[in-house]
Length: 80
Image 1 (cartoon, rainbow, N blue to C red):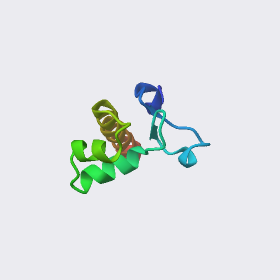
Image 2: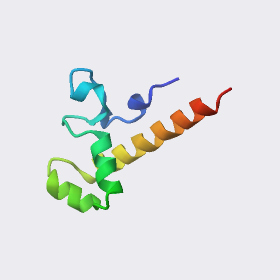
Image 3: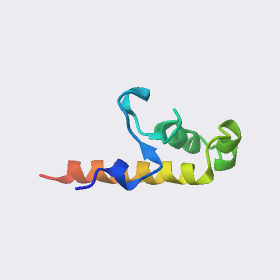
Image 4: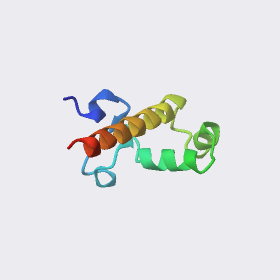
């Protein structure tokens, strides 16, 4: 099985950076922070204004990573 971070080239996990949380490659911006901002009502454009070094593709990658992570966790919980 391929680890989810390997399927998302823009997302990396390194135990030396942000305690190993998934981050956008080359930044200290966590997937969690991006998803929480989106969930809190911020638009991708507002996030890009706050973090101009991010790209729209970075935000989409964070969303895709979070969706895959959620699906994998749900599948693991569903196993007997």
